[in-house]
Amino acid sequence: MDFNLTDEQRMLVETLRTMGERENFRKLAQEIDATAEFPFHLIPKYAEMGLLGMTLSTAYGGGGRPGIDAVIAIEELAKYSPMIAAPVFESNVGPVRVIDMFGTEEQRQTVIPGVCKGNLSVSVGMTEPEAGSDLTSLTTHAVEDGDGYVLNGRKSFITGGGHASHYMVYTRFGETKGYKGIGGLLVEKGMPGFSFGKQEEFMGLRGMPSCDLVFEDVKVPKKNLVVKPGEFTKLMTTFDIERCGNSAMCLGVAGGALEVARTYAMERHAFGRPISEFQAIQFMIVDMAMRLEAARLLVYRAAAGAGQGLPSIYDASLAKCYANEMVIEVTNTAMQVLGGYGYSKEFPVERMLRDGRAWCVAGGTVQMLRITLASFLFGRRFDQRK
Ligand SMILES: Cc1cc2nc3c(=O)[nH]c(=O)nc-3n(C[C@H](O)[C@H](O)[C@H](O)COP(=O)(O)OP(=O)(O)OC[C@H]3O[C@@H](n4cnc5c(N)ncnc54)[C@H](O)[C@@H]3O)c2cc1C
Image 1 (cartoon, rainbow, N blue to C red):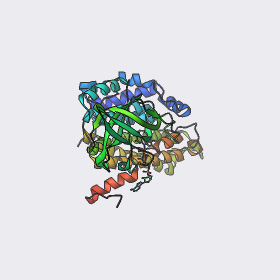
Image 2 (cartoon, helix red, strand yellow):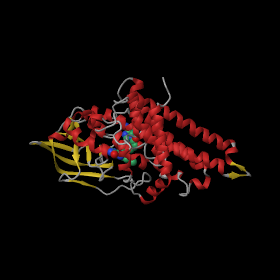
Image 3 (cartoon, rainbow, N blue to C red):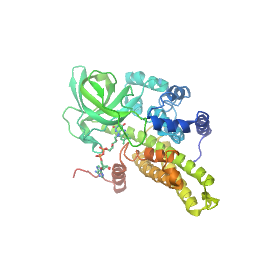
């Protein structure tokens, strides 16, 4: 067992750290939050640096690197802001991986090179107004019609909605109930009948494009079928890669908050001494570091165990659940260390707390992850309907 980063991984971290300082990503993060404008200008830069699609197949322009490298990069950039890390997330751990792993040759050729160049991006459409955790109740449906399918339905809270060029849409085919009837169709922006709802207003993650997807008699060609009905587990297991990315965002945000709190504690004086000399403050900082390091081990284990393939469902669920709760605790404690300034927009920790709060819902709630984990620990599935 080797807990060290490789030379290449260390260089990656160093490069991103230097870029973050040089380009003042701290200020950029503040601006993104204030204006709610996504930093699209970073995309060509990231493409040039080989950060986009670094984990995708080399045959289509990807970097062919293991998933752990993307996790490390996402973590490093999310220390400033999840928005700054988002293009690396989308292009390496997002639904484009479903296309890379299970798509046809034509689908890969159409999408992956564009994703690596930063011209295209893929979002995932699973959640519906009446089906979130209870995903297998989804009602979006595709009906076979000649050389294609006619798609109808609505998806909610879709990250990248409106901006992404392609959408991996989880849909029911025909009348088959439950997970057996669900597969994945690739829907392209601009297809007649495909429109977007209004931009979501979230408490955090400001600047992230997010909206409903609306499908009204959208004709999707059969060649856009990525995952056939009955192969729902393929969609879900690939989603565990995304869960590692989600967890990496938590590591980054918590790491950013820890650094702000540690520095502040050395500079802020009370009772004639730096507050870092008070044991109560030291213990808060130590507890933050302890939780963060524990989460990092779980996340890295899940990602490293996956290699260039899929992580274990148990490892990925455990890592996401722990990291999702860790980031809330760490950012909240950071806010306490900063006293009144922690609650002020003058410092970034209130934003980090708002951003960090999203992940225990996005990508599957911590309650649903615990249900998955319980099924491993008890060696049986717990049907939530019975
Ligand atoms: C920032 C953000 C980004 C997102 N991005 C995307 C995206 O890109 N694509 C996409 O498809 N979706 C996305 N989502 C949606 C997200 O996946 C869902 O919100 C999530 O799965 C929960 O579904 P829900 O909101 O319908 O909550 P519900 O399923 O209604 O759950 C409500 C509460 O009940 C609990 N609960 C439900 N069932 C059980 C049970 N059996 N046992 C115990 N507790 C239970 C849940 O844990 C939760 O606390 C995003 C959400 C957010 C906040």
